[in-house]
Image (cartoon, rainbow, N blue to C red; front, side, top):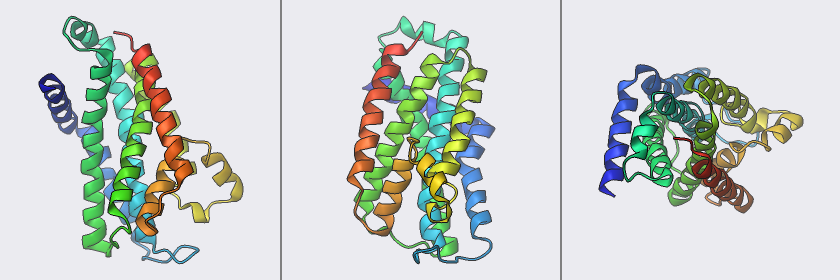
Length: 241
């Protein structure tokens, strides 16, 4: 356990020291929140305030960026630089390595999500979540499922550059189709149908439902658990040192 926490702490410090990773995880979502709300907090179709939908949506954006772009690139770069080969000589197991990488990158996403909530409350009067435990559970399952996909990508990608390209190619369509950037209420039916096929959509739906209504959708929770188990298991088995 001591070795695990040490690896997590080191990886978190490295992430915060990297200007690009720190900006896109901590600063860019705040800019997006300002851009989306600079025209006023107009209600969405259905009556929900824009800020009460946007902040939960953007927390998934932060998680997705850390899980699908930064995490796989880091893992693949470590393989290129033979860092993983040196770690193989230690007691570290593939499960421990994947878990430490996931934890470090999701802690970065936690910081980004907290900053979004703070700005939403201080600057735009963000409402309190209807069910804080429900929102936290939905966020955690979203982080687990998207993080598992990112770990699988990092385990299979031949290089850091390839992992970044593939991660971005997955990330940007997902955030626009899943409702992490554009509210689902304003999308066409075909866009929503396509977005529902992405692993990001259940996280958006669960966090928004927990924030606005307090009740979490069981199907979305089940999908996130299944994706976490399947993709995470495959990532641990496929990890190449």
